[in-house]
Length: 267
Image (tube, rainbow, N blue to C red; front, side, top):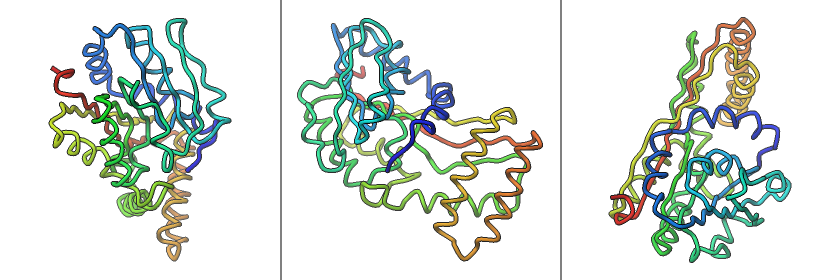
């Protein structure tokens, strides 16, 4: 699944303000004793995770940014002199073993786990366990969408969207809204210390462009699932866009951040 640089730039400020500060502070605390950190960022895009997280962690840091899209990786720049970065164009489905797991202290991902399959998540766990590398996975969509003012079809549309989130995004049948809970359970079963926290997008009437983009995205997903209900879906879309245009629309979209640490590191 591919994303444009324009979409990633639009969502980045909302991601930044939504990620759980408590989990970032926790991660900073448990890694503060390290003389250096090597961080593998999966599905890096333009490097938004590095831009957000690096200022909170003790330097020096070396980031390995892994993504299938070379044009997005070309836009990634390290934030600060004590942070270095290299990029790796890699197919995260086929080529996980090509990454240098033996050198990694921490694996990060942003808005990725809801796109992957249960099998892929199992593979990630195996590699993190073998490398004794912690995991910080932020902004995992968890199935919750709340609108104000309400429309009678909000719940139905959300259900369509959530069903679409479990279709194949390139990794096999996607975990979708179940991803954060699944990841937390896997790492707890491995006796790692796991913490989760909400990282919801909370959009107000001033966030018009982002709300419009999300409405169009949700509409497209609903059409893909319930194409026979096109007029019903279009009516909902029109009503929602009018609420945005009138300055009446609020949207909360649920996400969950996951931090999983080896027991000896997390204490």
